[in-house]
Image 1 (tube, rainbow, N blue to C red):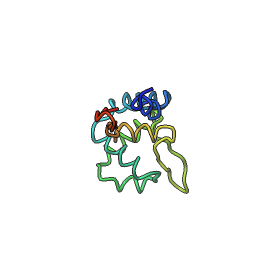
Image 2: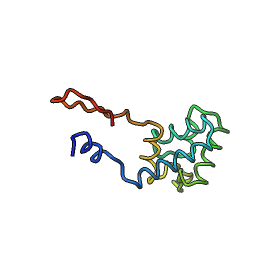
Image 3: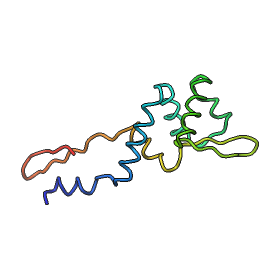
Image 4: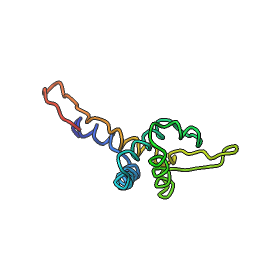
Length: 120
């Protein structure tokens, strides 16, 4: 097996991870760009309560619409915390959302004895 093929096999994603990323892409198609910005904010900010959600740079309606859509499809989870509610990206979709919103650049491998490069 050629080196490039070995690297391709070792770096390939598990089919379940690919399916989750496909599902996230499908869901995101239903969100407008500002709502996707809220999901990005929540992904990076981590679990937060209603007050912290209010510190997001987006308007109230965008935040509410994004939360409601995310909760209805299971991308966002909520739970009681103290006297309020905590919101977070569902654990099973954090990596998939991160990979969809921030894809990795292609991997280029140079094979020194042949001088060739292959992008994976």
